[in-house]
Image 1 (tube, helix red, strand yellow):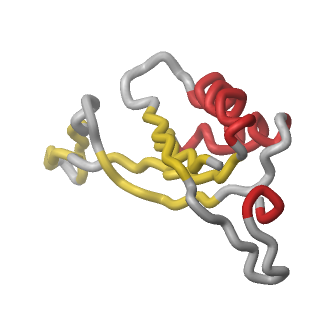
Image 2: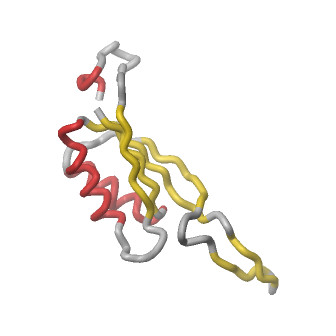
Length: 112
């Protein structure tokens, strides 16, 4: 089992969710986050004063998937979240040692 953590632009959430749903991945957690990478923020005007916005709004999407579905899931996220511009985000993949569904006590793949 693998945990996919993707940092994406907020307006791409619906497309990413639909793409994952189309391949059979229905569960995910989404968190509003702020951050920067190579994009390094931008400047904005507010009431005539210019200020620097260092941290940009992003979404952190987490989804647990079977090892078999990993490549298909990452490809779906890449296609759906890609705008071709700086700041599209990143995908991180980590191993999951154990999964337990609290309600039923199911473990492993059955808990996904």
